Length: 435
Ligand SMILES: Cc1cc2nc3c(=O)[nH]c(=O)nc-3n(C[C@H](O)[C@H](O)[C@H](O)COP(=O)(O)OP(=O)(O)OC[C@H]3O[C@@H](n4cnc5c(N)ncnc54)[C@H](O)[C@@H]3O)c2cc1C
Image: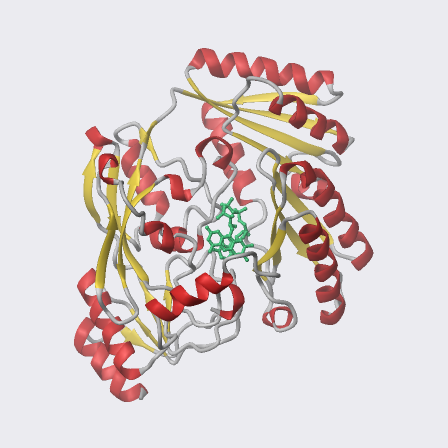
């Protein structure tokens, strides 16, 4: 199949843009890789793979490639990096349409020229592509004020697993009525097709930004400030808790945890909120530092990326009801102590999502690591949450399902998968329930 498929793909994209073998995903190496340059070429590539019965792995910037289970099969890695054009930019209507391989950072730089912003701040922002962002559904600390990706995607173009091209949603805000098909593809991890184009809503850029960093020797005092904030009229853009190990990775504090507050808006509101947060932090026994504009933006870049870039990382994401957030941070640290890991933990303190980077000791036994993570997953599930492996070495993924116990709706997801991808060619095995 390879030689025939290879020449078919070369006929579509041109020689030099098909190579092999492709980069592995969780230890599974596709025989071929292809770099189509247009949305039409993506459709033709997908059609050729469908005819050959070849399993496809779409790839953007590679920041969330570790998310999900190891692929059940991988024949062709489809790189979207050459699809990096802006299709339509409509500043008056605050929206932009761009191809899926465009990097989020490039889009942000462009729309900043019109003093607008796409308020999404996932980790890996520099390398993440628009398509990968939508497929993985990654959000960052700013989700507290701006919601998730679903709130900012107006429309998508997708190549279905048989090569058919579809357009769902709209290009302008007033178009989004009726059944929002594009929501199906958001966070579907490329299991239903390859996203080739995304339309986003934009937001006017705030006039002033500030960050307030509260340092606390006792985490309970930091969480008391979170509680006080939730009961107040203050509206931070993000509220992030960093345990001492995470704060140390940023050189933010030697031995304390940090509660970081992001503020954005008019200079008056930002300054007033900065003063009020400073007072909250001091009254709770912490020390407060206020950073403004460029210094604030730099501090948040560090916070967003603090858990990225570790070698052979174990990165998990735990989502729990808000009331269980502090307990799960402590449970993660406790599990790490017992298992001999170092654990850098950050939490979106007011939305109940925490991420933990676990660095095992010098001689980790994979079985023990898996058992420790299973214990933590049980605690998350007992709190009506879940633990998802965002990245882990292949030997660990072989022992531990990346998604945990599927929540309701798995039958529906399986039906959708059969409907869209009856041959199981799009990212097979990586999504929930082996989809
Ligand atoms: C195993 C699982 C499957 C889910 N399936 C769906 C679904 O098909 N559609 C839906 O609207 N909601 C699904 N949810 C629920 C979903 O997480 C939230 O209810 C909802 O989407 C709110 O998103 P959020 O951004 O707050 O989720 P978050 O709290 O940010 O994420 C919850 C966790 O579940 C993972 N996750 C999120 N969505 C899915 C998904 N579709 N499939 C697999 N893992 C997912 C994420 O990686 C994350 O770690 C699922 C949750 C889990 C744990």
